[in-house]
Length: 606
Image (cartoon, rainbow, N blue to C red; front, side):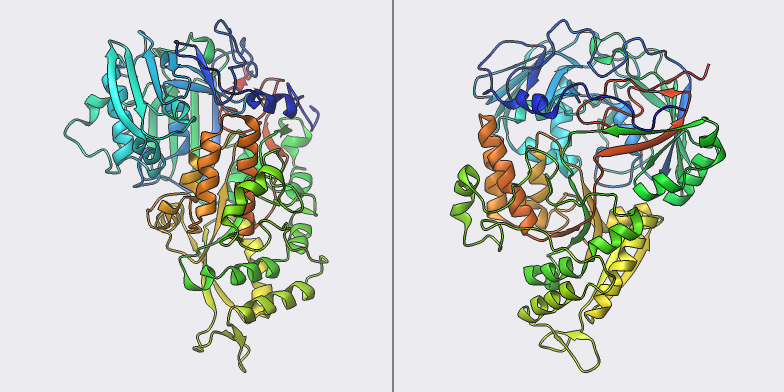
């Protein structure tokens, strides 16, 4: 059986982050790639991405298991719930991302990119051979229509960049130029990542209406069959236009990628054990050590792999909706953090093997440093000192317990915070405000998320000791998406993955517009001028030092905002898979993330 701890990482994190060290190159000529800072690592004549097997065999199929279902095949709009794999495998953008660099793009639909020294405009030139899956050529008119339609009728994640485009010009048979109205050095890369769809398909039709007709794309896979709530089958397009591009070499190796949908996570695992699916991602460290002693593992038919990464921890935990009056008070949110007995929960569910998320960008150079804010970080935050919460400038750390179930010390501190906020325990043992209203709230969870339910069950015992009643509501994926998109919840389980190159998406996650605009990542409803200013600074930064300082300052604002009760993260991904599935020895710095599984895997079954 193969070793449990697998591959080496191609380069150290310090070298990866050094790609951001230089100022942006001043150039206004067509180039093969573009990096957020400095120059692309790969030369114009590269033959393959550094983390693929360029000689990987092609053929076979892979079956992946998913919890939940889908009711739409349009992954670019707010309405409906579309399978994530369809977006990843069926559609392409002007440029493709290398996951072995913090943020670098290379030509995909576009053969070249051109921008000015201040990056106040960008131009893309299409490859002459770029085709949609129906065989029609990709035109600059399709590009212009896609950017505008996604920016006005698509999912809110596309709207921010569209608002920063002052002018769009078709400057040649295959060239389009976008001029910006806002200083934002990331915008050329953001436009390079916009999916390109076929304009003709949607003439006279409502793009924003959900349905089971998929937009026509240019990607390596097309839909071969589906049944909502049961499966989605993607077949590799034999006429795929981009199969010979160096960027694609060693990728898209399976003839079929099939997604099987099940009611909950436990059923997904049992389907894997039973041979229905080929891969299972394990999020629980204790289960990884204890639940994989079944015949297929012992015989070597199933292999356990650990995939390291160098990306930030991101945030995962219970988010509090500040649009609701109780959680609008930071002292109440602080009390919730104190009542959450992380050390006991972590020991019970993972054997205390998982490190805690200590801030949104922890586990990376971008994370806030311990102690008081210093240097450029302090200078960036000081103008907002009056609006910052305690700890942002002075230093902050999450509360810790002694690991006992009682959590007495932290619960006493939680009582004190709640009293400061005007809550008192009445004679009936219920926590009430000055008007006598009981402290009650709802926690919404996705049905079948067993571990999350276990976490919440243990959290409820601490709330009960405070005189607080929390109702847990379980719902299917579609209902959960609908409720959370509309911010119709008090508390919910929340995850937000963060990269080594945060940019415009930060405004979608934490920006004030999301307080009322549905479908953003701002589930907590935060409205922070300090956060907005830090995002502006990191978007305009022309040096690595300013960029890192702005991100660390943003991390302080987010963490001390006490919006999320964080749980744990893993520095390694745990993937159990059939032994005939393979992946390259070289692991990208982002590890098991976008572009890894199934993109660069292959089958040796036959």
